[in-house]
Image: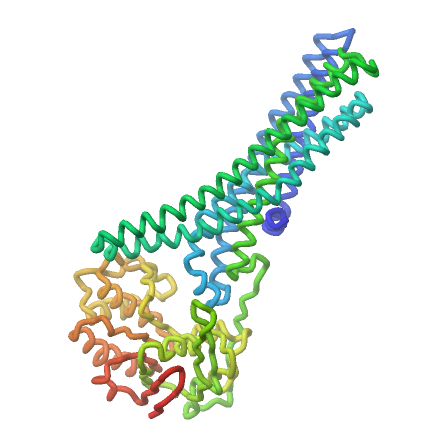
Length: 538
């Protein structure tokens, strides 16, 4: 199962230590039970011997329990931490298009999903100890009474079969609850990010809650309720089967006298010690199925849980000359389908090149394919046809990471990170304040301890801050997607006349997506897109 596989892969030595400690705890608890049952049936009971034997096993059980709990808890916390970190890294390493298409599903994965997996994993110490106890007690029971033990094993097998049969139903309802949780998170995202629009429109805000959030929440809770009810029914069914089996054994003993009822009473005392750990084990099986649902869901959004390798092959071409294209597209194509899946948009085939140090403006109407082309150039999208070359070298999965690292980009929806740890302290000190002054944010924000003092700014100010962060990265190529679209004329002028000039002076290659035709004269060349085709190339 995925949970156990990931536990073992995460830390095999710790897993084995925790498992061994739990088994020893279970074995010591079996010895405590054995000493009690033997004392009860012993006709020559010796109090001193019982106190020494029971006290030794009891003390051993206590010490081992603490050791087992500590080692298992330590392992669990490390594994949960590693799971969070690995999941974060796998999201970063997953194909960008898959992540983009499932963006709203990622937050539930990193929050509720990880927490639920942590809850399931946290029950493992009790389960391993319990199973060790059950196995030890079963061995003792077989020695104590083989015929009664056979009946008990059959009874436990029936209970296990009932649990196994119910697991698909539990998994089905768990999957339904998890799927609708995604939809609920989407609505919550709209509630938070669209609060201005909802506040201004009373009718829409009411319908958004009444017609979307409430029905989705109700549906999710119905699936969760079904999952809980089926689980409860399985629990009670196993209890009823166990009690019925014990009752049938009493009748059989009374009718056949194959053992005395007094002997059966002593045996029953041993059996009762197995009920609690056995219940923990069956509950853990259900938890594993729920965890499988979560892992399958994570896989479905394009995040591989297996070990992945991030290729970082450097691009070197000693034969490349400055006069040759820095970036070259040959028969570049990309296709994606609209929501209805019947219609699709095709970009290309396109042939163009971008020279080192060039200022290239990419223009065209809405829906012409500018942003799609930008993501292809940046290596975020994989071309459906054709190729992209950098310094004369074809971009492949082996050098894609290196190629992407040549760029810094600011999109219309770029997130502004407060942290600047990836930028050298010298560069922050040398250029940070200069850029803050240039974009007139001096009274709003500073750079301290390698981070912006705040990102709680207006939308326009955030875009200026994202521009500062991008420039400070000091990359070879910069791409700006409609950066000035929502800026007032004053800051548009600063962007085109000052910022672009600032970057050109430093030899940067610029790709600017824009509608501002009054600034086209600042470009070395203009590429125009219309319906996914290059209609003008100057």
